[in-house]
Image (tube, rainbow over all chains, first blue to last red; front, side):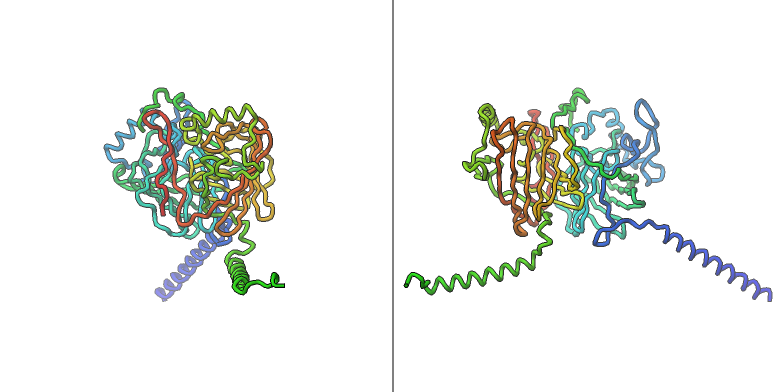
Length: 265
Length: 249
């Protein structure tokens, strides 16, 4: 008797537990954000987007506020301590870069590279069809054309913005980027990558005006392990237009960085 | 009497030609429906020498003499530019190429489009333009190298009205130039899957005595992708273009 009662009670509990699971699952399902879609069924990521948070532009590892720079936490979500897993010599290089802001390639009108182009609070327009996703950055009028047709990467290509190949993983756009020139930084603090950089980016629309951008960076000659950064891109108000960015065209960055004209960076 | 009788071989040719034309029309109609004619997407490039010298390339269709209608003082400036073109040409110094020059450089560009705009991405100097289609007015006085572009569809032709220019670009490598009062109206018409007809009416009262017009076909380039063309500073402190490959698969 006791045993069967126990058994019966167990079943009741099990049933309740199952019902609870089912209702959680159902709730989860109904709460899941349904992104706007293209005719081909893939999420429509088009629009003008911008990282609303500023601190990562200064330092992806986060920093305390000082002078006119804001403080904030790291955007590195892996490793969990939020620190870039540098090899010892590379950490030394980053520390040295930190003392030489004039080496920052963007100060010489060069492109931000990947993932840096999406980290500072500058706008990027996403244009998308079934064959391509295009990222138009306002800064340096840099462009990334991302074919979605599964073609292989270019060989012997060494570019500031790398060579991008995209695919859809469910509702997430996954972009594999190689072919870097190894000269880009990650932020204004001198954190950097070299030519062995390989990035896998993930763009997921989480709300009508929010794309979560994740970049997993692998670079065995700079880092002891792959690491991942994550930032939220916010949709700019409707009607926002990118403006033309002049850098080479008349701006003399030597004014900002005296004596930098002959710096190798 | 005999003059109305065609020689037999010619009749055969006409018949064959007509039959061929019908077959081609039907076939191309099937492969390329009406709905695709306002689809300008693709990688395009000029096949002429317009960038070297607009007048010599014979792409000026108005005025009928094929010459750029310079004001006298502007003609003198053009001669000066020509003499110093190797060092003064802004495109060679890594400035963005400007409009209309970007369309007929010897490097490709790629068109993307959606409901908001037509996006023209040039390989040269990783330059791009956004031609807005929402009827919004120009932003005035911006001094953009690539101008401020507002477009509309005239049938299957994209018409782009471009103004708000700087005076920092040239029209070709031969020193043909403009001022910041440049106003360009471009027309892009996809004549067939492989051909984009490009037309630009160029107006600049500071430099030219009248508006003038260029027209040329641009060809679809298959099997290539737009590559990164960044500028580097050389030993002499001058910047030069670095396109990573001339062409890549």
